[in-house]
Length: 319
Image 1: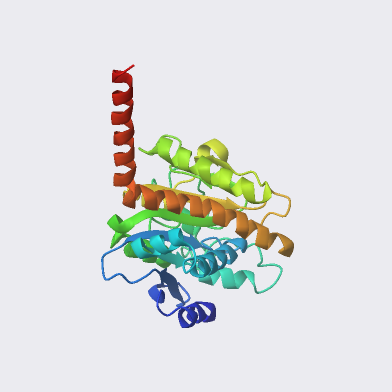
Image 2: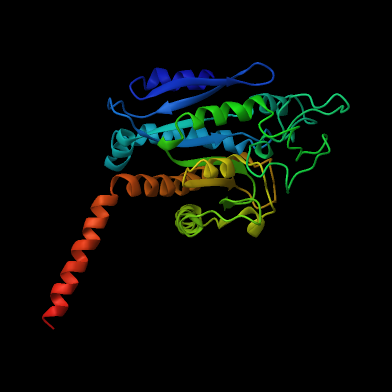
């Protein structure tokens, strides 16, 4: 929270803190809204980090992303254009209760879920927030053993954190161009849907943009990322935030699984934090630039294509 307040203090013209919910342990769920005030209704980009408590590299990336776009927009014309057209909504740590719990001692370091108590007949705590969204909830890729790390909750949207996200996003869902959820580990970009029997209507586009993002990632430190649906490249997932967002009509939704490939798993060495963030930033930037340009430069691109077509017809008519 102090870091978020410092961002507002350092950049009061473009950054505000929005509190949009409470956790089970009554902590504020907050995001940074970042963008230039144009006085007009704007499009939006969503990013959440730390939905799984033990994935410490994810909140670190959110901080890195915020720092980069705030440093870049004053000198980079493209980022300035995006800041004028789009507001970025960045939640640095969604699962705050669970995240704080992982810092208590070595025995809690690998805690994944939130910290809400489960049914009366269960002695365990926590729901996997990324199985709790109303998106084919509870059908595959979960366990109804309440002690399992994949426990999806007693019902869809049972958790305060989940409802905070859905209420906020649903209230302005037509504004969002893309929805990005940052996780670790595995070096993957996961696209909807997590259920093997469902395919996103824009699957080809999601794959194309994802491949472009993985190429951008590779160019930074030669790190290989894989893009695909969870059943194709990982395992089936239902009740995820990104599947829910795609079902709301948000066209570009991705889970980023950051480093590493399994050597250190969730306990990434300190010397890998910076390169992980550097490469992931390029992948994210590729996706948000695509989303922006498709929305705001589409007419220009279509005009160029049309003019090219006319020119070709003109040329061939005289050959």
